[in-house]
Length: 378
Image 1: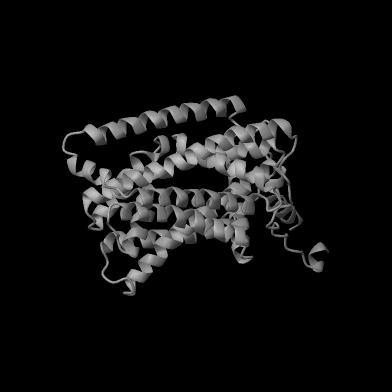
Image 2 (image 1 turned 135 degrees about the vertical axis):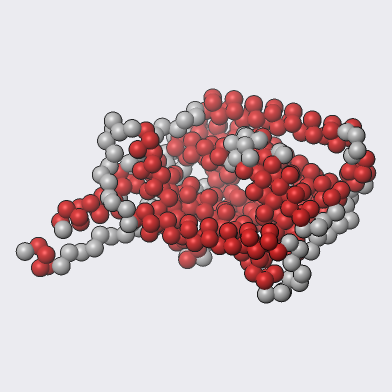
């Protein structure tokens, strides 16, 4: 029993004993990657614009684009900036509420810029943030678990939105279901995914304890062990922030999604069309899954996902295509340009200041090992 107790102690503290391997990217690598990504993104946008403006059979789409309301598009740019700032708010709330706002802004915006220009399905921003925080003096285990908590909370608003609106359609609040198999299928999948993620800490805690991996352990074993600990503690941190009703976590999570969704809504308005609330929200949330394709800025994946979903919801194809293309242009270039400037500022901060990040204690305390009865020691 004493041996089992020692194993449990090691299991509960494994994330604090195992260091994260050195970052794969250095500053020069990141700089080259961002520059290359901006060039690729610009080239792809030029090709798409040329196709829309000169391609055969696209006259209806061209007419839609030329008749767009400039005022609504300007409003879309403002809303996208609010979405980007909301991302900064939740970044600071999750990683360290005591971190100064300037440094939080630089990392948060730089991450969004990386997500816009790097063709790695959103992993570019996480990699850049991990590199910057490590350079700033934050511990590796904290970066791992907080990255999981951050991804959990930023995804939660999207997943919760799918569940909530599917339920509203099911009880008849939103009227006729535009596509029952699609709405209820994704609603059920989102609910199951949420329950699975919430169960991860308990699932991992039930596994046999492992001692800290030795220095000569294989990369795969060390990586899997670190990932398991980060997932377990990261989900706990995310749930704890929700239980504490952290203003930064709640406002940032909802704001990042809601303002970006509003951009798509005003792009529809720019062409004189307004989908119902249920169609707009679910079309946006389901269609965004196309962004998981590893293309620069999600070009092609996001567009096809959104257009395809709204088409299945019986929205007019020409207006939908025009609205989605303009929405995606705003959603790419606003964070892409501002984030690139923030990345330059971030490099300067890391070169001037030795440890600009404030490091705190972990938010979620490890589960303490069960105390043994007095009779068991006899």
